Image 1: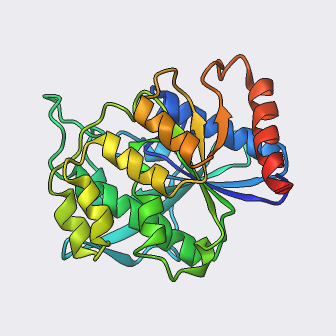
Image 2 (image 1 turned 120 degrees about the horizontal axis):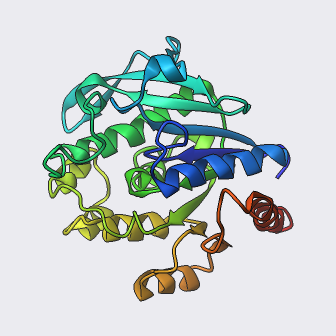
Amino acid sequence: MKGKNFLIASSGIYPYINNKDYAYLAYKLARSINSQGGQTRMFMPRFGTINERKHQLHEVIRLSGVNIVVNDDDMPLIIKVASIPRERMQVYFIDNDELFKRKHLFRDENDKFFDDNDSRLIFFTKGIVETVKKLKWRPDYIVITDWFSTLLPLYIKTYYKNEPLFHDAKTLVVLNDEMLKQPINNQLKDKLNFDEIPSEWVDKLENPGIDNLLKMALSFADGVIIRTQNIPKEIQNIIEQNNLITLDVSDLDLEEQEPELKKRVLEAFADQETE
């Protein structure tokens, strides 16, 4: 654990998003890792719901200025950063006014899923990698906390396969109830084809629901962090067949049982040091 780098990718991190279990899990995982000698860097979108003045976000000019291409559209990447109060933990915010400024996360005021969530997903994925490249920071572990970061393992292994910073990184996917029920835009396949993602993977998203995105992420994963009691049999089979590292925190109250979380995190990653 000591000296290891953890990249945590999430659509929300507490206290910037405070009504989602995955956001609190990302925060608590980072605290547990940092307190035991690891280093974390967390990434999330800069949604319009986030009060930049209250949370003291500021743009990092040296990291901004890259254009991200999504389906032949050039969109500027803006990177903002904030430190979680009373913690030595930085959060990097992937920002673009067209994609993230709105005052809702993934659904409009009529509870309709945004038509461009697929583009936002790809932009977030590429934005993380481009930021890490500028930081020249090599992650040892990449934690995927929810559906909005499920494309990251695919892009690292295909689109960014020649990027040495990620060659030895192990990927862990969080399984939670949020991940198992989200839809996604049917145009995602076309946008992956534009990036020349191999057809063997694009074809798996003929029906790009969150279940297929999750299965794809697990295809590249080295481990899972379990935060749900409701794992479908098909997902359980993937975990067993691939002999994935398993950190089960489904039974923990993250507020009341943080010492137990730290213990399990240490045990899970200490096992990796001895392999």
